[in-house]
Image (cartoon, rainbow, N blue to C red; front, side, top):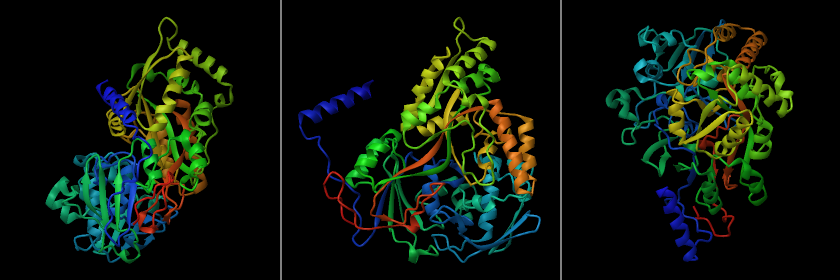
Length: 548
C-alpha cells in the first residue's frame, strides 16, 4: 500500500509540473571510438556461475563470457567452439573432442582438464546444481550426482591437454546441442580452486568467451567488455555490452523507443500488434521451442487425484488466452512438447481438446463431483505465478475458467526468481511456469517429468511406465523407433495430467534496426560476437538517440 501511495504522489507531482512528456534518451556513455550495446535482459541473474543457474536471462550473459565445446551459429545451430572437431565411436558411446588453442581471459591456456573439472563439479552433490540430471547420459553421472560414486568415476577424461574423451551410458544424438548448454560450459579450474564459489564475483571472474565480466551493479546493470584474448577477437565488433534487468516490459519498450536500449528480450504480448504499427522495424517475433504451462503439485492432497488434475486441465479456455488475450501469434497447447521439435512426432491432443468449452467444463464438474468437490464443498486452490507481463494477463483468465466449474482460486504473484525458487522447493499448489528447450530434441521437454529429474520436476510427477519408455528411447539407436517411444511416453504423461499446457511460445524481441547480425531462430539464441551496431538512429519520439 505504501508503495502505491508513493507512486500516486509522484504521478500528481509530475502532472502539476507539466513536465512529464516524452523524455530524452539517456544512454550509458560509450568511450570514444568504441561500440557499445545496451541490452534489456529480463530478470536479474541469480548467479554467473553456470552450475548455479537455470534461466534464459542468465544464459544470455554466460554465453558471452564462457564458451563450451560447441557454440551457437547465428542461426542457433551447434558449431565448433572450444572444440575444433570431434569423432564418435561406431556404437555412439564414446565422443572425442579436439580442442583449439585458446586462453582464459587471464592468459592461462584452456585445457581438457578444465572440462573434466567442470563436469565433475556440476555433478558433485554439494554443488546442488538443479540442472545436474541433464547430464545423466554421461557414464556414471547419476551415481556421482547421488553420492554413490566418486567424481573420478565420471566417464570423462583428459587424454591430453587438447583432447577430451566423454563416455556415455547410452547414445545421445543431441550431444552437440547440449555441448553448448550452460551445464557443459567450462569453468577455470585454477580460479575455482583458488576462490571457491567466490570465483564468479566480478573481481575474480575469468572466462574464455568473447567478453569479460567487468562489473555487476545489483538492480542496475551487468557490464562485459571485449576479451582481447578470445581466439576470434579480431572479428568481434561490439566493445562493451551493458545487460539491464527489465522485468517491466512496457517501461523497457519506452527505453528502446527513446534509444536508451538497443534490445529488449520481451514484449507484452497484447502490445505486439500496436508496436508493429508504430515501430515495425523493431519488432522481432519467431517460432520458438517453448511451452507455458501450469504444474500441479502432487504433494497437495487434492491434486494427488487424477480426476481433479484432469478437470482443472480441461476447463481452461486456451483459445481465449492465446487468441484474445496474448494476440502475439502464440498457439493453444494441449500437449507438452511443441511442434517443430526435431526427431519427434507429437502424439495427438486429448479427445476433449476438440470439445466446445461448455462441454469440457460440464465434464470437469462431473470429475470434481466424483472426487468429492461441489457447491457444498468447493475445491480451493492457489496459483503461484510470475510477475512478468503474460502471466499477469492469463492467470486471471484461468481463475475465471475454474470459477465456472466451482473452484475457488486465489492468485499469488511473485518475482520471477522467487517464484521458481518456490517451485523447486515444492512451495506451491499450482505453479505458472514456462520451459524453453535446452536443445532441439523431445527429451529436452519430456525429461522434466522423469521421476529422477529432481528440482525441475516441479510437481513431483512419478510414473514408472513413463520412466521406462524414456529409458527405452535412450537406448534405441533407430531414430524412428526412438521417436515412437517418446511419442508414447508423451501421450501417457498427457493422460495423467501432471501439468496443464497453456500455449506454445513465440520469441518476442525489440531490436534496433541499427543492429546488424541479429538472426531470428527457433531457439532464440543471439550471440553478440556476430553482431555490430551502426550509428544509432533517431528515436521514434523524434528525439535523437545518443550517437556512438
